[in-house]
Image (cartoon, rainbow, N blue to C red; front, side, top):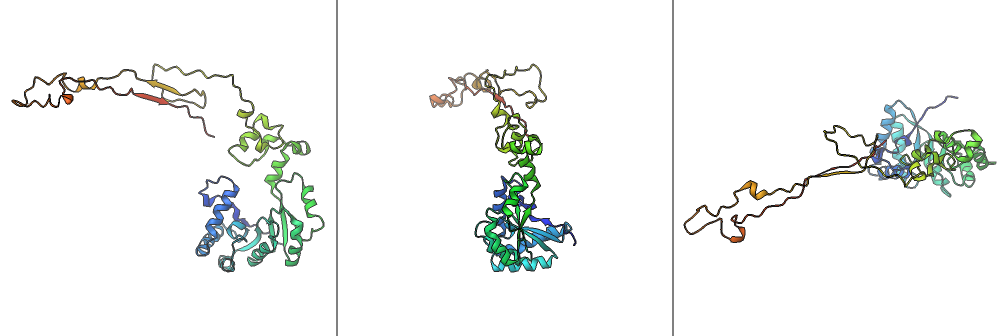
Length: 316
């Protein structure tokens, strides 16, 4: 039997967010919002397939966000069938979460795009088994929370004719790196591939995470080992020009330098008095109105010049 190498369209999960995705649900939501409208679906689905074909693939694993069973109409399915044929692509599997009582609608989409293989999360796979058997479909249960293959085998139970597994190696590795998994698989928490890159990776590499059950939710090193007794010493203003500050090497608190000399603007711009100038025989513009006269100049006080240099922490 020939092995098929197919392209997983979920690789484009962050595309519709401009590759600024907050998390997986964010990518899923923005992708569905883009593909769901029927009037634009043929064009947008066609662009997706064209991009995949240009990469040299002739088969895809179709991610449900590109054709979701919750909104796919007969018109969506007909357009998808025509475009798949037009681009010379076959569907190896339909990648979707099979929720409770969703097996029928999932099977409808899978059958429409020409596959009998479904892969994804399934909170109640045994409930879906009778529908899968009736429709001639198979479901590969994707591992996420499970820590050992035995947990997947328990979900398959006696329904191995229609249930199997879709292996997510990243999740196996991450879960082996939890507290209990470390002992079972002899792995190290700092090697874990964690989710939530902003905090998860920082936490996984902190000393506080080594004994944690879930490194992805452990406190970061700064939170876990905070020392409130350390007081930073303000930097001393140098006598010469500083060409480059390196706050990430030697961080300092905010530096504020103030010029305290207040300047008298009136005296530097005009004479102290113009009362002696004759601008007319009876009309002296410098004296009237009196409260606007420069005969009694008043210094104009301006705010001090202030230079602020703020410490910017490094971004990794």
